[in-house]
View: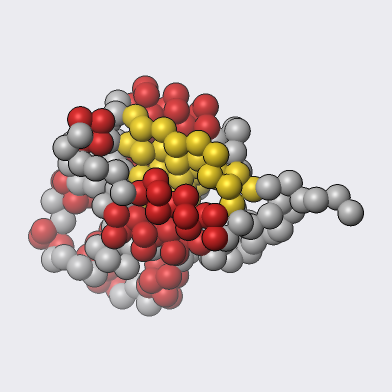
Amino acid sequence: MTQAASVTAAVLIIGDEILSGRTKDQNISYIADYLSKIGIDLREARVVPDVTAEIVAAVNALRPRYDYLFTTGGIGPTHDDITADAIAAALGVEISEDPRVIYLLLERIKPEDLNEARRRMARIPHGAELVKNRISAAPGFWIGNVIVMAGVPAIMRAMLDEVGRSLRPHAGHRRDDCGGPSAGGRLCGTARRNRRRLPGAFDRLLSGFPRRRLS
């Protein structure tokens, strides 16, 4: 009997604060332990600064080599949170504000508080699935074999729990769960439920945003 090939992964930690020592990384060891328990081998980890060219180069070096590439950091509201744009550039896809994310943010904040900084968190590469964030609403995303998560450990862990059920533990195992590579455009968690009950007022509010097929 032929033994199934192992499923492999890499982690890309993004952030100047990690390289400067201002913040101690807590995510690599957690992800390694989590993946090991579900039968996925973490083979490589890298740390890169908040520099688009460096992120693009690392993503394009790692994603062809492994079944999954997990990234953490750089998806917040500040000017140096450039991960989403860098991932879009690496994969050669467009990026824009996603109405699904705007709606999720408006569940937590008032429309008048949706400032430019917060709207940065709604920039999602086209074709990506959202990864639910049950702690602070702004989601991560999954595109191709790249899974993009927050750098804050508690939020990263919540996001990893969300995608964990969709990761395939051995080669050849097809996952059709929400968020997985075979999900065919499905939404995750609250995003799926919200799509079914978008009230008219929110629909009008979102009418100015670029629309993409939601299912």
